[in-house]
Amino acid sequence: MAKKLTKAKAREILRDGKVHGKKLTAKQKRFLGARTGGSRRKRG
Image (cartoon, rainbow, N blue to C red; front, side, top):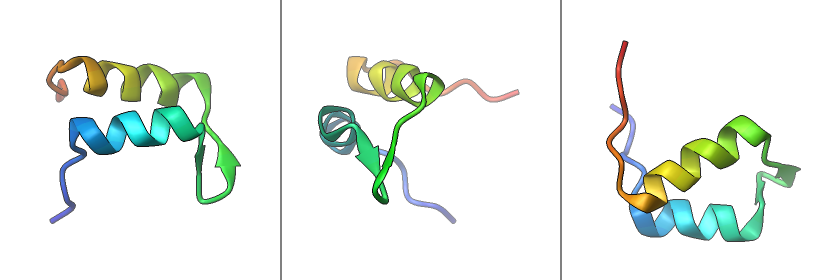
C-alpha cells in the first residue's frame, strides 16, 4: 500500500516545484495546494 502524502511533504514539494527533477504540472500544483490546505482527497 502506498504511503499517504502528509501536509508537510506536500508543502515541501510545492515549495521546491519539482519531483524527480521534473517541474510540477498545474494539476499537480492544485492537488498539492489542496493537501497543504488540509482538504481530504476525494475518491471516485
